[in-house]
Image 1 (cartoon, rainbow, N blue to C red):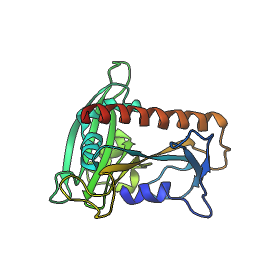
Image 2: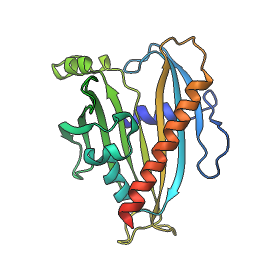
Image 3: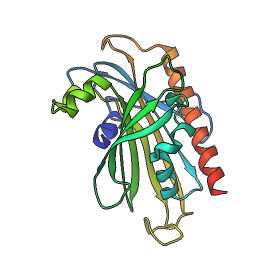
Image 4: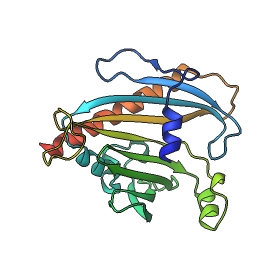
Length: 227
């Protein structure tokens, strides 16, 4: 999932970033691409949006906050205040933060169906990732029964957390810095299932609002907990 995330939000000469209306240090950049005949990714027009900002909080604290299902409702707008439960956990290294989790969002509204989220988190001294994607329940059941994992279409979104210099314990990258973090927030959204469709201004405005609101929620939560 991390590889898919980096591929999806990585810019290139063919997929250059466009900066939306400047908002100071928290500029949101967007790019679009057509997804066709790509196993594991849904077909259509994919809108990617990302922003990076510095925050005076140690990387581990941000990493633990973002990967914890119990604090997810504090920043994840799409979970809509529902109760998030981890229903499967696969360790992927010695550090407890290196794992793949299957999360179930129990909707607070009884008229809405529950949602599954596949999440991968990984961390080392150079940086950390928390990557996630909503998954179709029927498709996931096929995979859990031994089916082809390419049957599950994923558009991973998530976070890249880089240390800004050594922490208080001397860990992290050994360069002069504040001990804070550089956090990148990136979303991938399927805005139209038809690859030949054109992107609407409304889709760009929606993802811009989504990413800015998420950033504000994260800042408020981690800054409050570190105070």
